[in-house]
Image 1 (tube, rainbow, N blue to C red):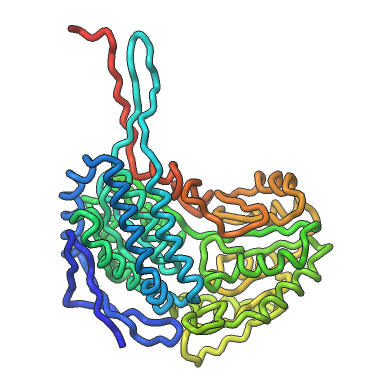
Image 2: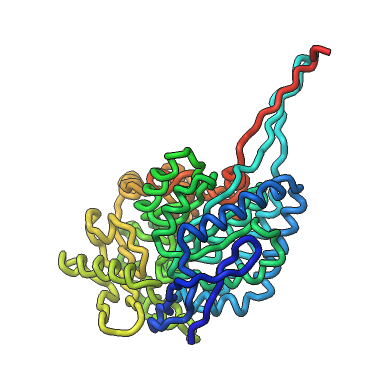
Length: 474
């Protein structure tokens, strides 16, 4: 049974005559109807944000911090409802959905503790010079479908803390939990400070090109990020882009096969592989390749692919038909080229729900599409390497530079390799860990700017330098 959801504009929940259907990827049933907004609704939301900015930007950081923490509390208090709703629209298993909801609440609370202190540039007999941070203005946030609540909150929290207001567009595939959060925080946030509107993909360019939006923060594909950068250039909007990745993990010969096998598996297959920093290429030293590849395949045998709402499911469906078709295309390309599969590879296109079996490929060539492209699905290629110099070059041979990992008992060597990888984040002996206090961003075509930490907060501000001549003409 589907439910009608509303948008949040200027402190009020609003509907539109035009609506969009939201499907459950596990069974392809309609589970919600949401407003399909266009220019009129966007103009209203932006006008509300612009009006609210005048007063919100003048509040103290302590006041803003209290609002963000209250929002975090509302999410946490309603986590049981929210994670079930998230699973129904996104597909991820309940435990992973629960992790996203509590993670979003915790991230907001943690980021709210960051500060924006003035910096003294000069304090001499002649002058006092200081740099203060002032909010950019109205922010346009565009959110993907893989972590819809987490991504929404990681844009809202620093925007509000900096003194900005925001107009946020969830993905048309996964807007429901975010709109439910909008209902929960409607009376917590001053009117116009947070506006959440839904629409088709055509709404995105309207946001990017809107003359009264001062900054765009976007998470999604590199191809779309380039279009946003081009659109924002017309009036020099500030931008933060967190884009695609083809993240490499490097397993050195001293790694403990039994200990790392399961961790490597989940570094690739959490959220059905639909994570920008998931391990998408795993390079294993030839000395342990056979043992470790067999151990990873054995882990796969014990993991159930199915409806995320059912107990025991480890990997859910692909979130939408377009991505399902793309993953199937990559698997078919591998078959057509005669690459070897350790497990999986047989997709039933006639079944209900967007299910792809856990698919692990055995040492495909470096130029295979499954290696060279970002899969964003439950497909993982394992490759052999011989020397550290060789594997570093192969890992860096990508237009992307988002994240990577090194697995070894020798942490000094792991760090030495990490420092040679051309990525924004490198983990040693772990995966998928992001700190609200550390900047996260990509190198090369994986992004522009940073999220999280002090650097992420500063993305929502301008520096303003005020210099006072001490021997003033008085």
